[in-house]
Image 1 (cartoon, rainbow, N blue to C red):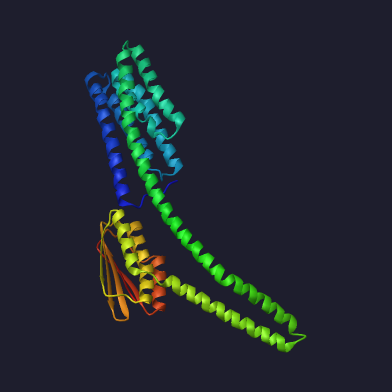
Image 2 (image 1 turned 60 degrees about the vertical axis):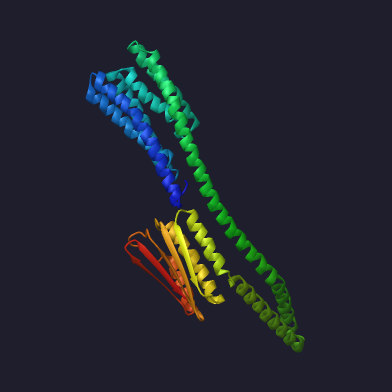
Amino acid sequence: MSTRPADRRLRRARHVALAALATGAAGGLLAPGWVVLREGHQVPLGLAGVLAFAAGHAAALHAALTPWLPEATRMRRLLWYVTAAALSVALVGATAGPRAWAWIGAAVVGSAPLLGHRGAALLAALAPPAVTAGLGWWQHDVAGPVLLTAAVGAGIALVNRLQLWFWDLLLDLDQGRAAQASLAAAEERLRFARDVHDLLGHSLTVIALKAELAARLAAVDAGRAAREAAEVQRLAAGALTGVRDAVHGYRSVDLAGQLEDVRRLLDSCGVRCTVTAHGTVPPDPAAQFAAVLREAATNVLRHSSATWCTIDVAADGPGATLTVTNDGAKPGTAGGHGLRGLAERLAEAGGTLTHRLDGDRFELRATA
């Protein structure tokens, strides 16, 4: 099961595709409704059949463009669609004739690309012309209704297939972008792991050997054992210094680069982002702000329907302030685990992290 798209533009594209498919389907189903009103012998039954099929068809369209639906829900909607199509044969075809049902048959043929299963698509393409032919044979009108079902249905199927192809392409692009971000994070973790291994691997091996030697010498040569223990202590202190230097190197971040990356990310997701910076942020606050900035960008994309976001950085001597504001915040928005963890981290370094919600406007402020 796929996840819901986080990109606002992707959600809008889905809504547009659904609207286009629904409009085309509704236009095609006006024709059988008109024929039922004009020629039907039992108009209420005929109209009930058209409306039931329209509801089932809408459910099938929604299932086709909602990949994160549970499979059981998808199957129920498709079963509803099949049932509505079968009922329409009796309710529409038997009361208004083959020409009325031919339009419903065309809609069934057109839905073949949306069913997601080769067998179901083949059945949807072949069964309606056969049903139309049977109704036409019963009422001595075969050629016209069958041609209408096949020709109009093929045109609808082509349009629906193009719409679905564009939607699948957008989904692939969104998933590819998410995979690229995950890969970049994984590569960074691997790089850090390699650096730590290179830094500590040799030192810890030597420490282990020296400690083992000191333990063996303790009973036979206390002086040498003491010297080996002192050497272990020296090696451990050196390894600890190396780790601290490495971590400090990782914490030295380019805040300006981080701000630009976040601005580009939000802009690419349809959120208009404005960045202002005053002064030069010292290294330690810059490292803290980078983490806050990443968490803020994630919250904007995942937990709001923002259309704009402003990021303001102000440096004043040894301290600095970062303020991130966006619209589209949902009611009841509160600090999650990520913000609480960042608040604790900033507090340990002498900083603060606060947030407030004013209507749909959310403000996150960090000081360091």
